[in-house]
Length: 346
Image (cartoon, rainbow, N blue to C red; front, side, top):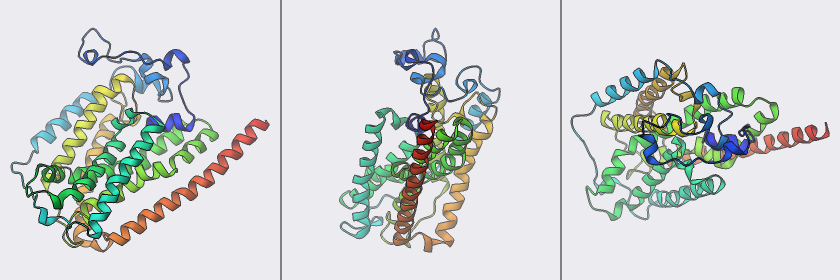
């Protein structure tokens, strides 16, 4: 989502129309040894990522980058569970036409609607963002939860639903933490150089669509994994090491995709994870440590604080977050308008 954050808040490239042209890239370019590692000028796709410091877009990788990738990959593969423990019986899902079932149906149709809206405002390319993939995964889980009563035991969709149960929750958790406490402060305090740009970026970030993607998504993930994914609210199986491993593999696959594909075409959605950064080992390890933290946190919530994992409570929190975001967006819009008026008068 960092890509649209820049273009939407007014901070775009500065290299002119030449950098706006999308150079033709073939799939073979990624494996052709005659091609340079960076496949776009200045390591910035169409100039939209000129705001990212150049040393994070082009140049040699940090000496810690490759050891980090190898260490994380080998560690995750080594920890692979020896046995699968699928619980894919339709009896464990809410019955059709129950209140939980209707929630899953509504969410399944509403969430793709927001995705379509986001694509119409930007481009289909936003689906490569970790945030959007988390949103898609949670949309899919809502849909499978709604279809479950009409499937048979051990249906392939139920197995898929089991596999992505914790990845859906942890990806929403990582998105919430990393965007709001790492990426947003980085873009706001470092990438945005003027007060007007800072206010514009904060206004964009507080809009309804972004609040849904970066904050409410974790609420929807809790709803479909811990609240409405079972017959009763009290029937919540703890996450096990197999669930955690699936989430680690998912994030590793995305991390390698980001480093080996998106970085090469100048799509710097998350510049703090650049392999050229001196902090590459810290940022990568932070994400995977978040998986362990999320694993322990959500199991602790299931065991000790199930009172907060109620249907009515989660809906209330979602409403409060959404309304608060709209109030903040209105205030920042007024401030942004005042700054622009003062700038024009000067």
